[in-house]
Length: 406
Image (cartoon, rainbow, N blue to C red; front, side, top):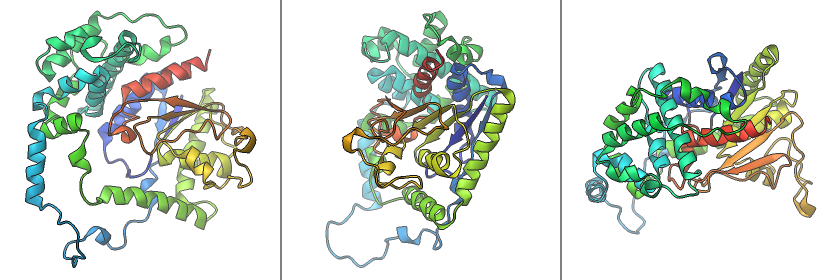
């Protein structure tokens, strides 16, 4: 079964292969399994469109404010003073070997997501690590009723017995080996992936390697919401994000078929052909700006391409349609009288995932007919970038995908 992942802004091909390997393993173990596919025969397309946006002509000179004549105002802290502030902030944070313990005190799933987002190792090790996190997420979801019964030590008393992150992973592994999941009608296939890899046998190597990566800086991010990471002048990454958005629209509107549109269209066309050849459904997952590009492609440039399940996460499709930024947007169509944009005839089902903690995620169901909004609340400061490497996200999407096949 084919799946096409269309990334958002700020990505270049592929900068983090381990991130991509974990992401694709989670796709295979959850949503593709829920759609009834054999995960060993699936193929994932990833059109890396970010590299097609123009590079800065002056090498980021616009970010350099050193040497400017002062106009007045408050003097910013020097580099040395900033370092002192960071050390002071870290002094009150959790110990380096208790990052996961600190996170789990609020939410066990939070700790699981941190592990999954930090996995390192060879491809097989990453698959086992992702499966371990997937099974842990299913365990958390069943025992806590997806957090509705509470979380942390109140629901998982054994958390109060662990002393550090190593003990937490060991105890979690023991709990998973003893746990027998309850049967859920029509969703059994979603569990195949994590039962095949890493269902037993202790903590996977890739998960153990996470402990070496977590340090006092990570502890600060977990316990203080990353405040020190967000302080200061705009960075190259932020500039890249803004540049990708404006670069896409400038490129799209300067030619009937931009190189970005062409690249994404080609990947979708290949996946459609693969799906038709094997008699399988096609799944498309689009994150952030990727959702806007996919909507442009399916609604205007390539309405002939048929998609069975479209999942958008942390996207601005609803907002962009309200602002009439798409090529297919009808400026005369508004929400007056409860009207909506007609559902795309070439998309069988559209699930739009919104994390309320994500400032770049917008609802779609009140603007588009046929869109289903799914609230995925994490409360995390990294919400926008965390969807596709969160086993909880994949678990939830898989459940909804399975419901659609009943």
